[in-house]
Picture 1: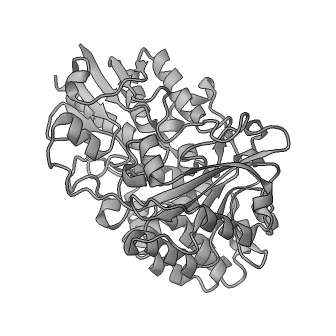
Picture 2: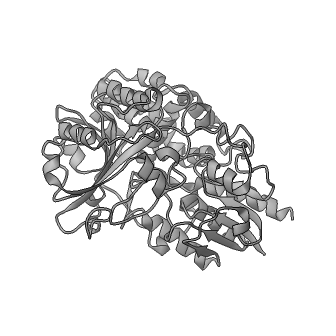
Length: 469
């Protein structure tokens, strides 16, 4: 009998498996698709030689993850590549605000009205970043914080809505960039703790950047898999699990799946019925014959580029997708251009690029034209660079990854109390009604992102159970 079986070979499932195997437990992972990866995959979606990331591509939380940093993943091929700028936020007049490694450079891009306000915002937290990130990404409620004073101060700053925090700024440049950071979790700007979301992304960039993985996000999943196998763990792909009886006998079962899938497989009935799924994304992957022709020079050297003309425009786009049930006329876009720093991703002189905008949950329309109109505002001539495109709306995204119910890549709405307390209001979010069944997906704290911390935290709950006999 195995000690633990993990269902789902995404970053959280693989991290949970590694943590258990490192402690001497026998582990096997079962993945429905024919390759590992979950939200961290790389595929030729458009043309031969163009390697795209179907979901996550830039990894500020991955490079800062306490779980990943404690593993020798570089031995297994993981290499972080940093563009000259972690992120740029261009404006229609050709200027840009930037999120640079340097706090001073970032503050200077906001202009004299807000430079001091930004430095004062991040200054209390950046020196304690490693302790802070460990505290807020670790097992909630049951893990004593290493630095409770800094964590409390961070809570006082970040728990209010981001609209409150943005009152510190007077100029549109700082407000728009910060609003864009909040939008990475597809949450309306006025939601609880959205200030913390924006602040986490800013601090992460200052601490260790906003890199891509050499060769694509698949490199993260492949490194975790190789390390797991060296520890004696087994990985089985192309193995769909429809019920618990499909799995071999084990002392514990750990699911890197949505609560919906877990309920169906484990027979939990309506246990997770109150769990909410949120707005979705419409994503386009591009093969380009040259770099994106951004008007703003800063955007040409950035790994990630946020596209939204103002805080108001970004807020309206999020509100339309999350609360009005319609696609925005001017979508806010998150874009990543990996081949700016990793030329292996495309043939010589050519580039891969992706962009997504927010749309309602389960939306079945086509946002391609709206996305490209928005890109043309900030990069005139963009369409002329397109060799091929691969589009994926909510139905395609959900078909590609069952955890993304209705196209929700956060595996559950990251808004309201559910941003902090997921998938249920409980002190033990990784346990379930069955004492031998656990959940470790992005539906559990600390939530979405390729960082493995949900798997790391869930593994703690599992090994405590296993040690009890």
